[in-house]
Image 1 (cartoon, each protein chain N blue to C red):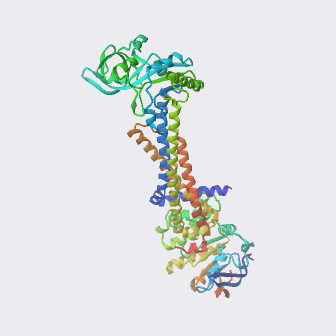
Image 2 (image 1 turned 180 degrees about the vertical axis):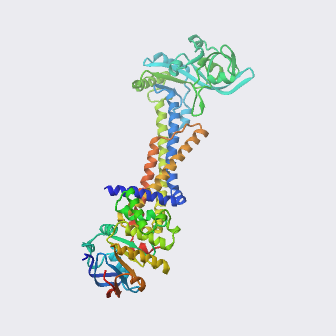
Length: 409
Length: 231
């Protein structure tokens, strides 16, 4: 046993020496392994990055919030069918607000994009959202300066606005906007509050928005727009029962007969999460497919090179055998050599994948990180490839006839 | 009185070449004692190399009994043969057979690696062996940085390093000029003087005559076994 370990360490030294003598060949040999491991680890790091960004964005929707909308978030086909649905209107929202007792908050909201103007500055196509008092309970606006709307402003459909950090920054160039008037589209609005800075998610600023009372939005920018109704549920366990209540109330509000299908959708974060998971698992499958294929090609490359190496080093093998190397010692020597080549390939690939991950983080809006499990998986795979594809050449070496090998020059 | 080192009884070696059986050795009987200095001579195709391979435990006889140090080599498997070669036999080849990319010291250490000697001890033993052949100052040189004679001396140091029972030299001067060849023979003579058992395989009469006994092989059999002088 002791001699086995001595032999093992000696074999590592022998292998390293042999590799140093053939650096170029060793590196070229590992190319397949490098590509394979790099593919898998890079894709894992991209998805990991996506997870971070996307999950954050989805989480910002709130897991306990239901969205009553004209269109479903996740739909396979038949977009036209949904398009023909009647719009969701304020009367639906009011009906739900009045009768839904099981929810914490019910807030209709409507969106539009408007150009903003203040003095000589203007911003194009800024997200302009119509809100109510209860919107604040759902999305939690942290007001940095000024205040949120009061119920009178909402009811009277006042032309007041609460703006995002970026609007203050760009339109008002950092001066205090409270009490100032800006143009939203063609309508003049008074700024009453600024929401705290939120940063950006996946490259999209979360601070470029204008909130106005929903009545004001609909009045000024389009009465025919379909709105959405946000319903906040007290806790996750109630989601299903609240959904049933909403469905009942919506059907009543819209006068649907029992045989008629719903002409609205109740959306929820989970549906997106599901779709997203499906997408990333597809990506993973593809990456693992490509990775496996290049590892296979790389493995065959390793086997090829090891066979060449065995043929080239017949004399060495003969000498070692004559001097007392047992067949299994020769086998182990060549397997260790191929494992070391592959492991080096794996290490190179992982270093490269860190570079790739950095580049992705730099040039795309996605955050990117190399997950630790993918590092271990990459190393494990490359080592395994070395072992697996090293066995055949190594056994071939060990079965050589020492007499013939000694004659070989 | 010396012990029997090598005992060959009715050694037959047959090769199958296609459908033809070639009888390389046809029942060789040979006894060699410890501390003997024996030459094996014969023209090519005589079976001399086959005999050397069997004595060197690189090959096994088709039939017959071979005992080395009272151990039944003819019954051994590959692993046991490797161990015997490692512990009992020191090879010196015509083409030196050194690892080209390893320095002299590492080449000499090789047999010790396979007998599991620790690295520190190996270095000491290899240095001693190199000193015996007068190459202490060349231990970090690679074979291609050494002359033919120096290479063969490294090979001899390697053959000595494990204190083998037998040094088996196959045409040790075959790739060397006359003068260098004589130097190498002097080293072998010396090793014999110091108590080593040596078998010399050669086809050169002058080289063979360094030994005390010459065994002539012809057509797979011992044709003549002459004792030149007593040990």
